Length: 335
Picture 1: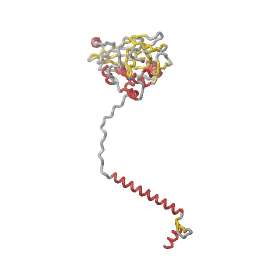
Picture 2: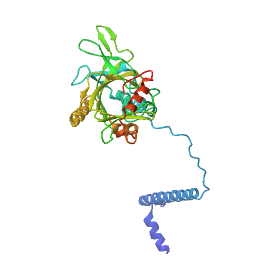
Picture 3: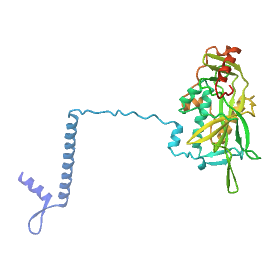
Picture 4: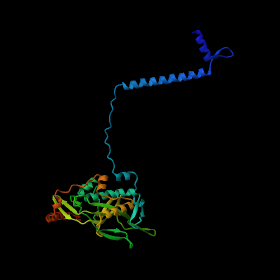
């Protein structure tokens, strides 16, 4: 045994010139490696002991937050929060391929405010009363103005065009329907224009309170119109028609419906071609068509169910009663 330790000692050390034993180089290296392994094992055992202490410790009481989570902002509000400019003077209006007058607004986020007002117009065509649509879309008041005419640009300068407007009775309700009772109204952007003209170094403003006005087509392919005021209901036949609506910019992202041009009104004879034209033109103006599916997907508003038996409610007495009720309002309007 003594001889074994002597041999092992000779392998691990050597005698220097003074006769003293010194560790060999690989002995020093092996010792360092061994020390590092022992340190790693010690750290691992220490961590396991600490983890055991945490697992077996007494449970801690946890208090969950009770603050109310704010509602998700609408798309229009998100655009405004994201920095979409609300000053019409900072917008760029550029000519389109089809018109020098009716132009494209840049940035396109500006259209989000316009869409909200178009959604109101669409909702009142789908059985929402004026008051219900106003509340559902978060308007402080109905987003429309009852005007006699709106100035639009022409080759001869600004030209006033007569406009009509829908009844403003808050309880009046209407549906534009197919024979099967499906919603049948869609809108599409047709361009926008500034209501001011630069002549030399002078700015001539002729649009009143609305620095920018947009033209929107209303394609009503319905064959029936249902009118309702309180308990009175009347259904009238209808011919698919295209009309032209004007929307004015108020500021702070808000738009209002200024009325529908009394001319032109264009009969719709080819529904497929009409829908294709609406899509093409809306896309050209960096927008999209607005219809019942869009209203549901964007604002969660589906068509209100029309009165039961609406197809047979054609009494002239009911019609006259509704007209009399609308005439009692101060603003009037045409159903």
